[in-house]
Length: 294
Ligand SMILES: Nc1ncnc2c1ncn2[C@@H]1O[C@H](COP(=O)(O)OP(=O)(O)O)[C@@H](O)[C@H]1O
Ligand SMILES: [Mg+2]
Image (cartoon, rainbow, N blue to C red; front, side, top):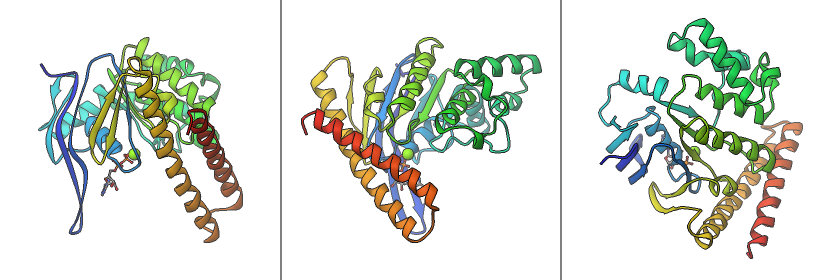
């Protein structure tokens, strides 16, 4: 029996001139309908590449993929286009909102692409914005919205055509308990109340801990699968590992930011904001690790 979402032995090779990058190296996983799954792993381990294949944006170099029970391994470009429009809602790490359109128009856009009648478009767009508490922000453009608000627009825009599957690439940027908690609450609502299968790539242990199962990727392959509900000890170890990964990455980001500022590639206000966020994140991770006995 094939699972609702299934990947068998996926390989993905990127060729850069005569350099080859192996982003996925024999990755296999199975997800059942109605599950909420977290995918975790260090930066560069292949998480985004995997989501792009599941979302019908990229093709694997080898291996097989089933989405909503259908084999999409050799799907045509037109079939992959349909998959993106109707079957898989995709929230990108970069959000990909259109800067010239309002929140309302960004949510409505996917419905225009599939010729949804005007009255239904209006009803769904209004309803979706209300669900995420953005009714009063409908006329704002992405630039005029906070990070958390932009994220919510991106999520409901991915839900515009009512796809049965939602995939979400790192919905919380810096670890920030309040914005992150709001997003994860909504993702649970999407999973439990709207009945969608949800896949979330995250570096936030608090999000991972609240899913049905956690797949950990390393070097393009799944190295473990856990049910947070089954083993408290195993999940604590995984959370600690995630915090450690994140601490390393945060330190790298801080060094990178300092370098950018020295080279005057970023203005003082932006620098100060990123600097504060990153240091808050770092402080938060250190506290959590300390709390866990590290
Ligand atoms: N378009 C691309 N061209 C070349 N290399 C890529 C491309 N996309 C990703 N990679 C490489 O593949 C690996 C996995 O990347 P990615 O899937 O983005 O990881 P993650 O999302 O876990 O950080 C990395 O080494 C990355 O540099
Ligand atoms: Mg990524």
